[in-house]
Length: 380
Image (cartoon, rainbow, N blue to C red; front, side, top):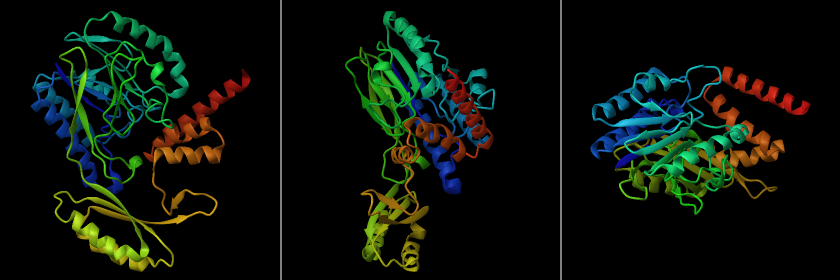
């Protein structure tokens, strides 16, 4: 038996206001669906962040619907949970529920295990860090069910595990139910697999199917996993998707012209125009010269960004005039500024994703909810 494990599609993401980037996300999503059909998988698991915002545009909704429809037409069932990007604080019914109601896909995000072709599948929607203690008993309940099930057991979660990323971690591996043979994870955008002695199967992150804004510009392979559960062990196989190339180059100001020559040579034969970032170091920098050099790449790239880096005397870290949006670094800097990991976690992991999506009302709801919680805690 074979299944696909896909996560963090972020359908509807429009980077840099570029329709080409929106289409890139749809293209790789459809690649994943096409490959799953071609390889005759028995079912597909979507591990959260189906959409980039809780109220996606019509194109994103239709793209997902068409993908699920094609799976159904090929007798391939699918299962999904919700990530934080799918869940609205002020919308009562998340959009993906529509697919469940139309029987295009089955929603499994409430922790109620189901049996499918002899496989036990259980899932939980994104759990906020403050809510995790409430789930200890639920994890214990499904672990007992998994312990007595004779076939494969799959747990689907959209969470950060500390052993994978200490800044984005919300759970430790020891918090997970131990009797599952495969842990289908979402949320972290890098591909990673770890096997822990205290768990019966691997913990697997496919990562996002395309580079998103929070990941910055870099060379990165993106894809999903096809998992063979024909035998005793779950064996994931990496399936790489054909994404748009992205490159970040560092150069001294005096070497900029030479670097532009090297970039031109590197990217001249690409079928998909890449996204390029050039980080420039040095003194006595003239922006007119930089812009003239960067302009030489315009016909060969989808987008080209340039940044000037300077070193701060008081800190060994390198700061850019427009800092890289890197989750770990933002969290570290937020802790430094706010003086509290709890406050930084709230700002970066809960408030920022909503604000960056333009969801002002949702952001207000989150702030009010957090303030009410703070008042209750102060009274206790």
